[in-house]
Amino acid sequence: MAAMESFFSHLKAEALYPYDIRTVDEAQRRIEEFIRFYNEERIQLELNKLTPLEYRRQLAA
Image (cartoon, rainbow, N blue to C red; front, side, top):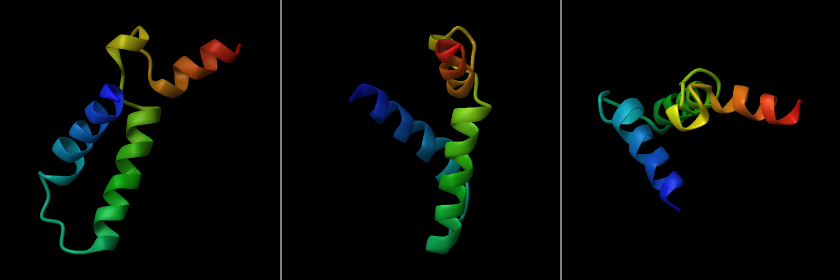
């Protein structure tokens, strides 16, 4: 549960609050972009400085 709370905290702080979002479509686009960024580009210290995608690939190899 703490992992999800942490994710939503980052989502709000990095992808929503800094912007003046006026439509549901814009909010949805920002959320989708953040999820892609979070999984594919954002380095996680808990994952040995890998992105979640890199970490999963490493486990599957």
